[in-house]
Length: 148
Image 1 (cartoon, one colour):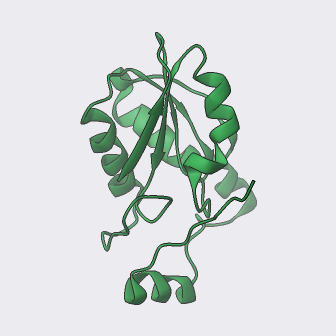
Image 2: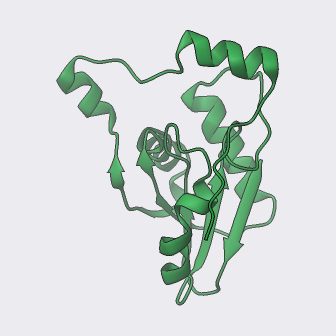
Protein backbone atom coordinates (compact mmCIF):
# COMPACT_ATOMS: atom_id res chain seq x y z
CA UNK A 1 0.00 0.00 0.00
CA UNK A 2 1.42 3.39 -1.00
CA UNK A 3 1.68 6.00 1.77
CA UNK A 4 2.97 9.50 0.99
CA UNK A 5 4.03 11.97 3.69
CA UNK A 6 4.94 15.63 3.62
CA UNK A 7 5.57 18.29 6.25
CA UNK A 8 6.14 18.26 9.96
CA UNK A 9 4.12 19.45 12.89
CA UNK A 10 2.26 18.50 16.03
CA UNK A 11 -0.75 17.14 14.12
CA UNK A 12 -0.72 14.21 11.71
CA UNK A 13 -3.46 14.66 9.11
CA UNK A 14 -4.33 11.52 7.15
CA UNK A 15 -6.06 11.95 3.78
CA UNK A 16 -7.78 8.78 2.55
CA UNK A 17 -8.82 7.56 -0.90
CA UNK A 18 -12.27 8.46 -2.18
CA UNK A 19 -14.29 6.04 -4.31
CA UNK A 20 -12.99 6.13 -7.87
CA UNK A 21 -10.14 8.59 -7.21
CA UNK A 22 -7.48 7.13 -9.48
CA UNK A 23 -4.48 8.89 -7.91
CA UNK A 24 -5.16 10.39 -4.46
CA UNK A 25 -1.61 11.79 -4.05
CA UNK A 26 -2.03 13.80 -7.26
CA UNK A 27 -5.64 14.70 -6.54
CA UNK A 28 -4.79 16.02 -3.06
CA UNK A 29 -1.52 17.75 -4.05
CA UNK A 30 -2.70 21.39 -3.62
CA UNK A 31 -4.33 20.59 -0.27
CA UNK A 32 -1.29 18.62 0.92
CA UNK A 33 1.04 21.49 0.01
CA UNK A 34 -0.99 23.95 2.10
CA UNK A 35 -1.55 21.68 5.09
CA UNK A 36 2.10 20.56 5.14
CA UNK A 37 3.21 24.10 5.98
CA UNK A 38 2.10 23.50 9.60
CA UNK A 39 1.30 19.79 9.91
CA UNK A 40 2.53 16.35 8.99
CA UNK A 41 0.29 15.22 6.13
CA UNK A 42 -0.13 11.62 5.08
CA UNK A 43 -1.96 10.39 1.98
CA UNK A 44 -2.96 6.73 2.10
CA UNK A 45 -3.64 5.23 -1.31
CA UNK A 46 -5.69 2.13 -0.55
CA UNK A 47 -5.17 -1.04 -2.55
CA UNK A 48 -6.26 -0.47 -6.17
CA UNK A 49 -5.64 3.30 -6.02
CA UNK A 50 -2.67 5.39 -7.16
CA UNK A 51 0.70 3.71 -6.65
CA UNK A 52 -0.73 0.90 -4.52
CA UNK A 53 -1.03 -2.65 -5.76
CA UNK A 54 -4.36 -4.34 -6.24
CA UNK A 55 -5.56 -7.04 -3.88
CA UNK A 56 -7.89 -10.01 -4.05
CA UNK A 57 -8.85 -9.57 -0.39
CA UNK A 58 -12.57 -8.89 0.07
CA UNK A 59 -13.31 -5.13 0.11
CA UNK A 60 -15.17 -4.98 3.42
CA UNK A 61 -15.04 -1.99 5.75
CA UNK A 62 -13.24 -4.10 8.34
CA UNK A 63 -10.55 -5.27 5.89
CA UNK A 64 -9.98 -1.81 4.41
CA UNK A 65 -9.67 -0.21 7.86
CA UNK A 66 -7.20 -2.87 9.00
CA UNK A 67 -5.11 -2.29 5.84
CA UNK A 68 -5.09 1.47 6.44
CA UNK A 69 -4.25 0.97 10.10
CA UNK A 70 -1.40 -1.44 9.30
CA UNK A 71 0.05 1.03 6.77
CA UNK A 72 -0.11 3.90 9.27
CA UNK A 73 1.21 1.93 12.25
CA UNK A 74 4.26 0.76 10.27
CA UNK A 75 6.05 4.12 10.67
CA UNK A 76 3.63 7.00 11.30
CA UNK A 77 3.00 8.11 14.85
CA UNK A 78 -0.54 8.91 15.97
CA UNK A 79 -2.99 9.95 17.10
CA UNK A 80 -4.29 10.83 13.65
CA UNK A 81 -6.64 13.45 12.30
CA UNK A 82 -8.49 11.50 9.61
CA UNK A 83 -9.61 13.57 6.62
CA UNK A 84 -11.86 11.41 4.44
CA UNK A 85 -13.63 12.25 1.21
CA UNK A 86 -16.44 10.16 -0.26
CA UNK A 87 -16.75 6.53 0.83
CA UNK A 88 -13.72 6.76 3.12
CA UNK A 89 -16.00 8.64 5.53
CA UNK A 90 -17.47 5.26 6.43
CA UNK A 91 -13.96 3.82 6.89
CA UNK A 92 -12.98 6.77 9.11
CA UNK A 93 -16.03 6.44 11.32
CA UNK A 94 -15.36 2.72 11.72
CA UNK A 95 -11.68 3.41 12.48
CA UNK A 96 -12.55 6.08 15.07
CA UNK A 97 -15.05 3.78 16.81
CA UNK A 98 -12.83 0.69 16.74
CA UNK A 99 -9.61 2.51 17.78
CA UNK A 100 -10.60 5.72 19.61
CA UNK A 101 -7.14 6.18 21.17
CA UNK A 102 -5.58 6.35 17.69
CA UNK A 103 -7.88 9.07 16.29
CA UNK A 104 -7.66 12.69 17.44
CA UNK A 105 -10.39 13.95 15.09
CA UNK A 106 -12.26 13.28 11.84
CA UNK A 107 -12.62 16.15 9.37
CA UNK A 108 -14.89 15.21 6.49
CA UNK A 109 -14.47 16.42 2.92
CA UNK A 110 -17.94 15.80 1.45
CA UNK A 111 -17.81 12.35 2.97
CA UNK A 112 -20.33 9.53 3.15
CA UNK A 113 -21.84 8.63 6.51
CA UNK A 114 -23.73 5.41 7.25
CA UNK A 115 -26.86 7.44 8.07
CA UNK A 116 -26.87 8.94 4.57
CA UNK A 117 -27.17 5.51 3.00
CA UNK A 118 -30.03 4.63 5.35
CA UNK A 119 -31.76 7.98 4.74
CA UNK A 120 -31.71 7.58 0.95
CA UNK A 121 -32.51 3.86 1.11
CA UNK A 122 -29.29 2.94 -0.70
CA UNK A 123 -26.55 0.41 -0.15
CA UNK A 124 -22.84 1.25 -0.04
CA UNK A 125 -21.44 1.82 -3.54
CA UNK A 126 -19.56 -1.08 -5.06
CA UNK A 127 -17.48 -1.58 -8.15
CA UNK A 128 -19.44 -2.58 -11.25
CA UNK A 129 -19.22 -6.20 -12.38
CA UNK A 130 -17.30 -5.10 -15.49
CA UNK A 131 -14.66 -3.23 -13.47
CA UNK A 132 -14.35 -6.17 -11.05
CA UNK A 133 -13.54 -8.32 -14.09
CA UNK A 134 -10.93 -5.82 -15.30
CA UNK A 135 -9.20 -5.50 -11.92
CA UNK A 136 -9.36 -9.19 -11.02
CA UNK A 137 -8.51 -10.79 -14.35
CA UNK A 138 -6.24 -8.23 -15.98
CA UNK A 139 -4.51 -7.20 -12.72
CA UNK A 140 -4.19 -3.65 -14.01
CA UNK A 141 -3.92 -0.27 -12.35
CA UNK A 142 -5.78 2.79 -13.58
CA UNK A 143 -3.95 6.09 -13.32
CA UNK A 144 -3.99 9.70 -14.45
CA UNK A 145 -1.15 11.52 -16.13
CA UNK A 146 -0.97 15.29 -15.68
CA UNK A 147 0.84 17.45 -18.24
CA UNK A 148 2.04 20.95 -17.39
